Image 1 (cartoon, rainbow over the protein chains, first blue to last red):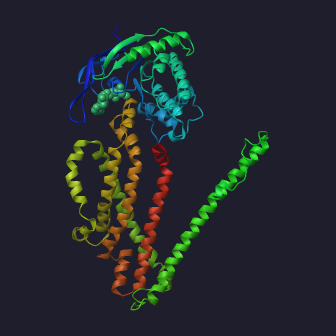
Image 2 (image 1 turned 180 degrees about the vertical axis):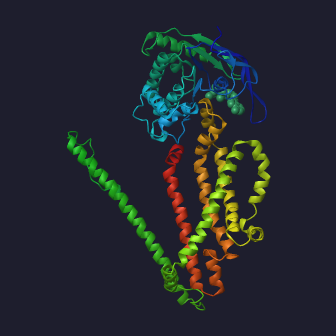
Image 3 (image 1 turned 90 degrees about the vertical axis):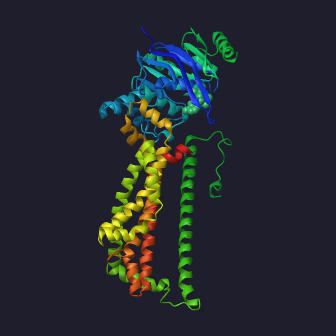
Length: 249
Length: 293
Ligand SMILES: Nc1ncnc2c1ncn2[C@@H]1O[C@H](COP(=O)(O)OP(=O)(O)O)[C@@H](O)[C@H]1O
Ligand SMILES: [Mg+2]
């Protein structure tokens, strides 16, 4: 059977400000299985966001093909939930309304929608913040709402672009714990972009290391440490060093 | 200054505060905050009042002491107030104000609805923007009151020309600011909406429009000021009611005191309309400033 996500020979060209060509991605091929947790890691500008946006369907690749569940990726779809780095929650909607948005677009009735949104927010530990507006929530809480907003549509993959980069370190580790738990509970695939080695080592079953100029895949490493991972363990320290090396070489 | 006045010892000094003492401190702290706020508000209002009184005093004295000024030509407040009272009592002022307000409201609703719709579509669709830009910007450059004679020729002397002129004049500021708000809506919002399954119309009306609403509102606020300018211009010629008419009629019968009453009424109405907008903005979009700070 084909993989859930198939990226084949994808290149993406952008125009620089001086009008020159900039290969954000060059000949990238990548397969991601259903239920898999993959981290894309690499320095700024190596095309991580571009790759994620191609999978999401926000743009078409200049070259190559991106397939999802056997079909070419077309328009963005709730099947491929996206969680952005910055706060992409709708500021004029409460947490509950944000989570209900996708269900509403699907034409789900009000009562059912409310119930589902309540459940989704409870799963990320925010049952008490239902009626709060994003500006009344902390950075970590907002990202929880963003995760709930994507998950409530029961996507087959969650595309996350440095979702925890802007929150403080303590909050980040709890968000990571919760993400692993949600991933295990739902069986959703996760493609998680980060430039943080610790984060990749803690989360991923597979780490895809990228390099810039032009953006391409340097190597792909499987991690078979069981979950939940212990940051204090010797294996984790080893893994961390190993990933750091792969990134740096 | 006032905030530093409450002399509560810091909690660290006395580690053995009981729960009750803690609550007491909190409540006196809260009371202090409220009292300070009220004090500031009262002081602000008092100085507002003092400013107005000084203005009135200067106005009262000036026509009497400046040589060569005729009290008939420049009536002081004491002269205007009697006229104002008379015109309030016989309902004349209210009737004129009401005529003007009706025109302003009708034209404002028509013009700004059109402005919002056109701004929304030109902001989202590059093709429409390119097509409409030269024409709209060209028309916008013509001062709306230059169309007064044309409106009279086309629509006569009734309500239609006035409402049409106000619609025309309010359209442009609302269109421009809606356009800018829509154009600058963060891409992230649109991408989020798309990946949550929203179609183009839902993106437009449930995401782009609300996200641009603070800008739209700024345009609407500007448009109210424009509407008052135009209603007066339209009523100065070819009207038989309204504050503009009142002013022009006072000119004909040489009643400068009545003219002053008309001007005063315009000032009050314009000020109230703007204050209402400012208050609404705070109330409707609390998320806007909080998010961008
Ligand atoms: N919309 C765009 N227009 C022009 N250049 C872009 C655009 N998006 C990304 N790029 C360029 O492509 C390269 C990869 O960007 P990106 O995918 O955002 O990298 P990363 O997310 O790994 O930091 C960078 O050099 C960036 O400047
Ligand atoms: Mg990026």
